[in-house]
Length: 80
Image (cartoon, rainbow, N blue to C red; front, side):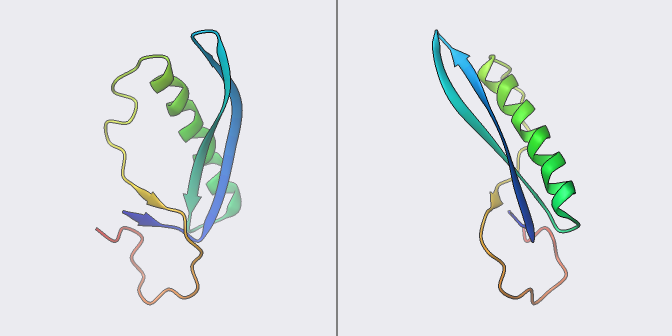
C-alpha cells in the first residue's frame, strides 16, 4: 500500500467493442507534481495494455491510496 503527497491523472478516450469511454490513470509521488504526472502517464499506458488484452500489465501492481495527507508521522513511502 502506498500513500503519496502529490497526485496527478492522465485521461484519454479508448474504444472497446465499438464503445468509446474515458479511461483515467492516476499517479502519485512524494517528490513532485511533475513526477506524479509522469507516473500517471505510465499508469495510463498500462491501462491501455490491459484493455487491449495484456494479462501481465498489472502483474506487480501495488495499491495506491489517494487520500489527502494532513500530517506525515514517519518517513516511510511503502507502508506495507
